[in-house]
Length: 154
Image (cartoon, rainbow, N blue to C red; front, side, top):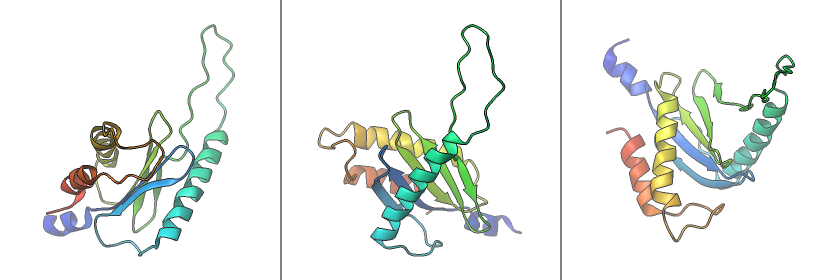
């Protein structure tokens, strides 16, 4: 496959942000390629993923018992990635429980770097905004512009 065609298939389709209670607080499509969903479908997707993510954290295989002083049970992360033949879903959970769901093409490199950069943009434009209320839908125009500048292909 030629390099131009490979670059065509490397794309970020969408970003969803879910609060720690499982509510959808942000969703945006950056490129065509995924099936169109209405707002109810996005809400259902966010709530369902939140529940599956929580269950996957609890069914993580238990490590061998360690009885050494100072031993702490390792943290479980839940679902970090789901892949199909047409897209890859990468989940990044922040220390406060907010989840970033990034939908990309399977060929997209450095998905972890991309989703962490989205988190940095979130911190810079949403969390530092004095008018933003925690756990509420994100309606910050500068955040939209910064994400668009980073994720939309020229």
